[in-house]
Length: 137
Image (cartoon, rainbow, N blue to C red; front, side, top):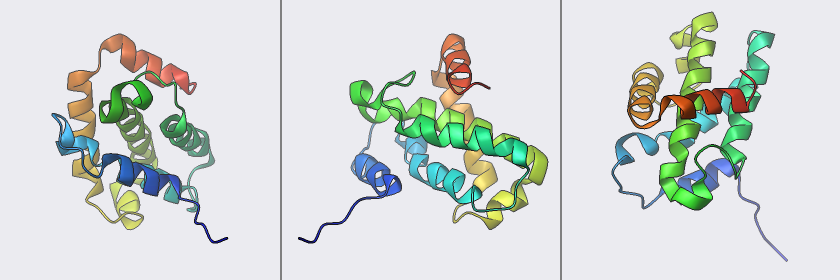
């Protein structure tokens, strides 16, 4: 019996592979943001950032977060992407975007800024508050 267990990053890529909806321009960055968060845990970073990073990773895999992927499909990744950007900006404020760039295979700073801006255009203020408080920030 030969089977392969998928990494959650691969699942994200698969879930968004054929998505071409209204918010495609930034939702498709979701898997890369997730991978960067995971990769940061293997770096020497300020210890105060580890819990927010873990919280943002956990938020991606939680089925019943503020905007559920199970209910809304790819649109449900908007809150995950917002939180990833929120936490990545925390990391950038302590270590700089150059540090993030060293640990990524995409242009981090412009993509984080674009994804945050576009997600905030969609999310309501109470949703933003719920997303942040969901992981205890």
